[in-house]
Image 1 (spheres, rainbow, N blue to C red):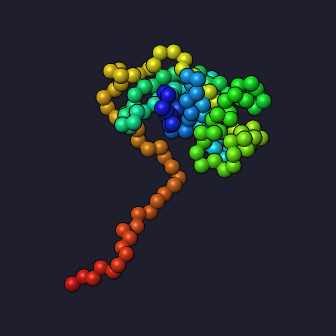
Image 2: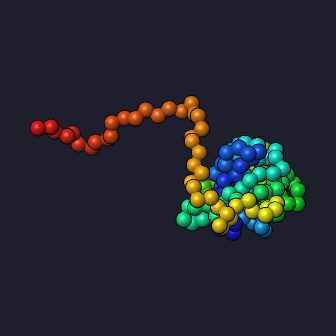
Image 3: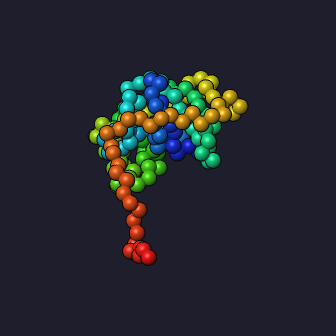
Amino acid sequence: MKKAAMAWVSVDGGPGLALWCMPLDGALYVVSGPGEQTAPGLADTATATVTLRGDHGGRIVTWPARVTRLLPGSEEWGASAPLVAAKRLNAAGTATELVERWAAGGCALNRLAPAGTPLAEGGSLPDGSLAATPRPSPAVRLTHKPFRLHRVRRR
């Protein structure tokens, strides 16, 4: 968990969403809300399931998490939010401005702490890919002919 930058978080048995996170003090911190990543239901739940993958891309552990939302102005917020903001890549403004934006904009800073023994790790991981079929989407992409820089002459 110390090297985690992405975690797949599942809320209420739903699909796992890939979320940017920051490990700190034995837990993962996730920011979501306006202007940040989308994590439906995470700010309103007490438990979630977290899956972490290793450098090789394979799953290394899945564990139950206790979710705690940190509120702006609290002692935990004051200690954690600046550290999370400092590691946030591609953020507009300084870490202090980012923390202020999170507090004013209704963003949720959640702490995901391990809540029990891992559900799967090491030898208990399944051998299959566990790939799910893609969820339905209204987005449609038409396939076009491949781009060619030069005209191809036919003989």
